[in-house]
Image (cartoon, rainbow, N blue to C red):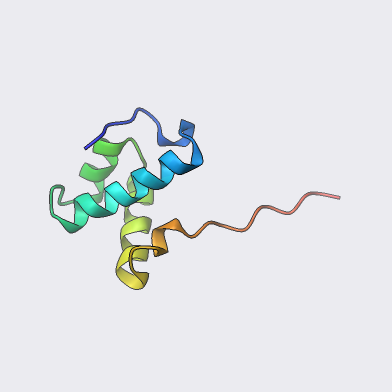
Length: 74
């Protein structure tokens, strides 16, 4: 497993790897809580939980779904 100081600073592809590793760590029970996953991978506890629930509800690709870009103010 890797440890990162702040996943927000990673390139988009690297962030995707972190998401998948968080899910894999929870799935394999290497970590048992969102907090443990968050500490190990340098993400928020909320993100770890969101990715895990998305994975449980939609499979491997679900955590990768991106939000729509914010609309620009006119």
